[in-house]
Amino acid sequence: MKKVITGIIVILIYTGCTKEKISDRLLPEPDQNERLIAENALKINKGKNTIRERFSPPEGYDWIEEKPGSFGYFIENFKLKPYGSQIVKYDGKPISTQHLHEAVFDIDTGNKDLQQCADAVIRMRAEYLYKAKKFNEIKFHFTSGDLFSWNDYKNGTRAFVSGNSVNFRKAASFDDSYQSFRNYLDVIFNYAGTISLNKETKPVNKNSDLKTGDILITPGSPGHIVFISGVCRNKEGKRLFLLSEGFTPAQSVHVLSNPFNPYFTPWYDLDIHAEETKTARYFFKPTNFRSF
Image (tube, rainbow, N blue to C red):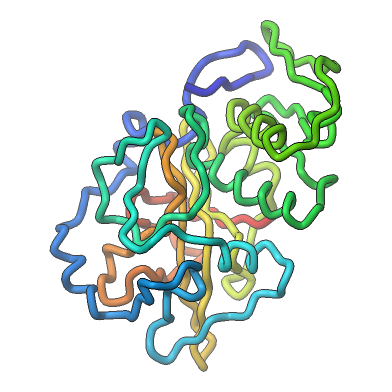
């Protein structure tokens, strides 16, 4: 359970995609036989270990090149677990639904129920900035609006919640180790969510601007979020997209399959102007694409 701080009181609710509370937005599980339809529809290079290497675009499409050093390049070249890996929860147990993903990112979930849907995006963004040594950019808002940076945390500042307020004060010695960075992210996961992440990003106004690293989000308590993890384009300029997500309870970050078009799975046809956008485990209404 994650803490959400409002301007009035501190309440304990899920800030992520709580399954029990969003059943009206969760899609019925498709027939598992659909995977048999798609088995040979698109080539999946099962022995490769990055998104860009493992997933071939549909015929007539080519990968859009991401600039080295960009967030998109980081995502497309992030290491994946071996093909066929299960989605597991923070306690190491597999989730019940294992037929709606095509790959699992090789990144830890932690041992607490914290790294849920918005947190998975925060994790990927933070890991990118950390690897790129852009430490001054590693900062996220709590749902309350309070900003907490990695620079503050590594220098010993800690967040203290009392009643309806958040106070920051120095309570630890300097520690810029990776473990300290992970501890910082757990604090962010506990107090941030889709509402704060929606405010920290800017809207995408044109389909041609959609790129790897952009997010599709429903802000709320609960809400949900997926992120674009690959883009391909044909000669006419039409684009298709890979989508990835975390979920609740906290579980492996994974690439989604596309049960609505098993011949093109895992690629999605996306439109920022669509009234709603259906993904394998959730539908977004309205469609709300945003960018860092």
